[in-house]
Length: 565
Ligand code: ATP
Ligand code: MG
Image 1 (cartoon, protein in one colour):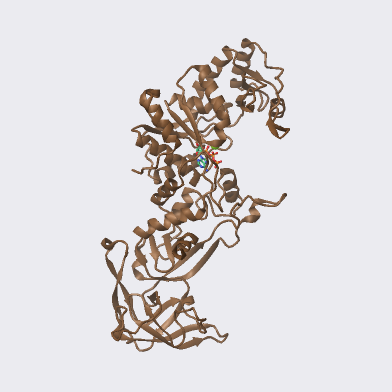
Image 2 (image 1 turned 45 degrees about the vertical axis):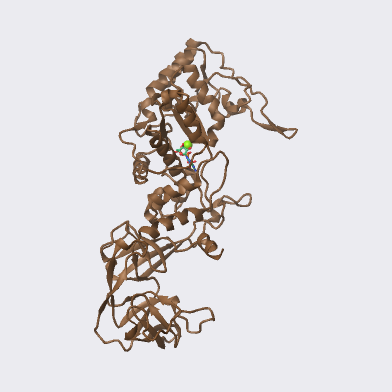
């Protein structure tokens, strides 16, 4: 189990345990709305809630906050469960749905009506908002001048009950009436100015079907759902801080179990949008191939790309929790992924952009199986054999015909080491009619088998290779950032944020050559292709043709900066 450093949330909880609030119990929940796939921000929230429950011997609920049938679907419920499970979060049998509380919420709403604390209002949504008023700036200060009371505010309890029951019975069209809490239209907090509790929506719900045509708002459903489940600490993001007085007000009016709401700052990442609404646009408008496109900040996308749950755990731990809004560098996430894959990913030889090399003095038809290390970071990973033969592939950019001073790899007349094999020397460059290099002729020195020369002569570079006759073909997809700007929403007025999409975020290489041991790689398997990065087998793979995603390069800006300092 993962220990996170003490933060303000854990301090509050430990204090509640000490003072005996909630009888020392800790019970948290993660309440996703099933209107999209989970993203890395949700991972922070779900892990925080789950870890806290575990650390204090408490319970953790997964609750679908499914109160808005217009945007919610079963597909999303299934995807969310898959992703939460993948993260290693076990909610056991504690899976709940706010829609299961619709009847109880309705009964409680009647209770508030009977106490004179709620009324049916006929104002249109626009009028409700106009009557509520808004914050303005006066003498440099933000103030909220009093709003205006609804003309329907003083309906009798009997009339309200009758109208509310008829709302439920479907007698009124969408948007014609709402149920509102009767609080204070002059309250400095706008959320307390008679907030809406129910809207009329003749829309079928993915779980309750046609049973309901009135649906509770978030504010009305959330705290009461927490209360029903016996949640002690309702941890949410900062945008709900202004709603906390309302959260508390409803629970106080009903006199039911009263959890403590605690807010923390959302996770924001550079080069990333993290609102489901915006992610949905990327999917629907075809900017990516789906919610699980490896360029998406969704957990499904990251899984497909080859990120590990452990790397995400480490990332979330390192980001920590705070009350202050901040933006985390995408580099930190990539760094965590590299660190984890470095420990566990087996090394393999793969040539992404092949250039043919003929070893002219190597016997025709001979094959040697050379020993290669599976993972220098993990001796228990052992070794494997890779075949060496007369015709090989090397990476095209490991050769230069006219190399600049600081290029140490293969060039005419130059000797380099082939990883796990021999020194080779380039003796001839073969070109096509257009002058493109299509093949190199090299000689090898049989005495350098294993990579050292007995006479002590040195080479300045070691390059990777595969045997042409044994190589398997593969497609490799290279990903770059999805956006060209650290803040993707930063566009001049009147422009679309999607203008910041990076047109080169995906490069597909069709003709990659892999060492033969990769032939039985399975979807989801992760490898380090030596010198090239970390790669993961994509579900688009077929038995005939493997497809790999590049998870992350070997070094990012972070690692480079550290090396220099
Ligand atoms: P989005 O704005 O991305 O659509 P949301 O808040 O509407 O997110 P919910 O499904 O309501 O999505 O979120 C479930 C939980 O995850 C909530 O408690 C929410 O506060 C939390 N959460 C959402 N985004 C982030 C984030 N970027 N960082 C941390 N927690 C988040
Ligand atoms: Mg939400």
